[in-house]
Image 1 (cartoon, rainbow, N blue to C red):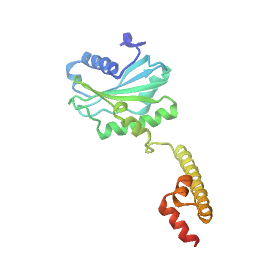
Image 2 (cartoon, one colour):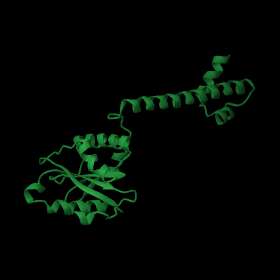
Image 3 (cartoon, helix red, strand yellow):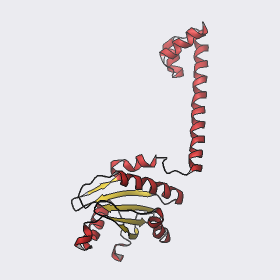
Image 4 (spheres, rainbow, N blue to C red):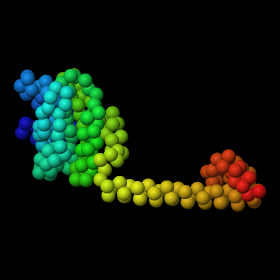
Length: 207
């Protein structure tokens, strides 16, 4: 495994080939169990660490954030890739796979060591959370977000909503003035961005 260190990951296929090779080195009886690895990477995607974090049953494996991040941090990794195998050969993330990835994304955000991808592998191929868009979807999740982050997010969203409301109020006021000055509705729509029904309702309110 030490030979794989300092190898640079340049494509997703590289991860699949490396991890499939490692899985084949396992004893046959162990290859039928789920394995979970963590790859620690440098800024240029050079491998600093490949660690087998846990080995589970035929259908599942369990790992805590501390187990996944402890060695990655010791090796000064700036990002990580999660990899686990499905002995069944089914390359589809389970609910548990999604849940674990969601947790690790939030931990990575806190530690400033982001999860670059999560692979499910088999001899036949691989599934990439990033490639499929699932990683980006989970990055938007607030399920495991810390309380102070949720509060900060709420304040930010509140400010954005208030800003939008303020702009909308200004547009309506501008539309009222323009309507009173005899501007055509199409011109008001163009200049304010308001819809025709909204402008018509403003008219009925002013008259």
